[in-house]
Length: 372
Ligand SMILES: *Cc1c(COP(=O)(O)O)cnc(C)c1O
Image 1 (spheres, protein in one colour):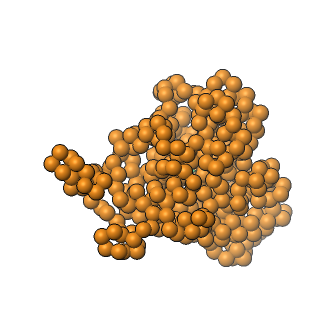
Image 2 (cartoon, helix red, strand yellow; image 1 turned 60 degrees about the horizontal axis):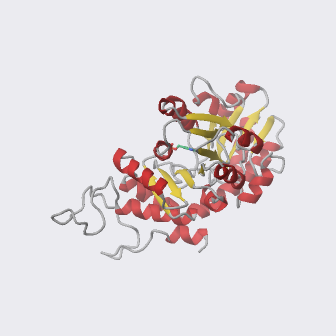
Image 3 (cartoon, protein in one colour; image 1 turned 135 degrees about the vertical axis):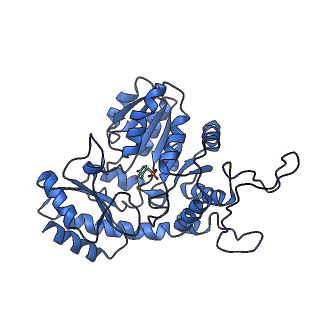
């Protein structure tokens, strides 16, 4: 079945007990079992697994074309669970441009286990090969990357990882499985912040891992989640599943609006550079065109005149709300350097835009007045 159909039907069987078409939310923390803990309906305790989370995992598995999925309380919980599965003193590669939380996790926590993480430009395969030479356990990719929208060649990264007996994990939050399926390109697992496009309405936090194989890695991560407890709550799982149903339709609209906004900005005299992989001048355009169905709803723009000029645009925007996060119906804008803490890595003139589902002409009118 095609993604649009899977998004509507995966994990959507009518409730066996009542025939309800919309899935029930099972809030029960515990499930009746036999006198010697024999399972009756497959469940025991909510932290280990629950029916609403199972439905979400069925949908995530189907959409990414994997064999198993694990839903988490947040994207960071999913990243943590995956990286905790690494042996102490592993070497890993992370993108030089990536979600700030990954950088902080590596810097503030994984170092204590002797894990050495090297930041590499994942769009430069020669650099990735050179950084792998000392031996690696894992390559973490994020494509398109946050916030510069760099593109990494997933199939090529999988080859490099596998040549070293390492795994490739892709953060697919920006693209979603509707636009890009890393497992089909050779990745071993996909990570999502479902807080973003899956949830789609800026009202539910969540994360997920989808695995190519139900293997020892999957078992280790599942055990970690069960013991440490960062599951998706039934209500969060239910909201995220509800978001899944309209994900393909929303992504089509996000991509269309982002194209209109990117083309408008690219032609504006106050703009130094637009980072959106759908533009033919983007350095990753050819790879993105090969491995993505469309180019997504995220972009960043670098304003001529530096930090003050960028902040002036951010302060004049009206339809675009100044806020962090992305992937909701409403358009958001953020000066990334201001939220990256003491040592910002984003250029001071960069604004990140999450292009929402409004009419593109209204979005462009807002940006036009903010740039005036
Ligand atoms: C938001 C985000 C995360 C972290 O997810 P949370 O749900 O906020 O914990 C990871 N990667 C990317 C690309 C994100 O945008």
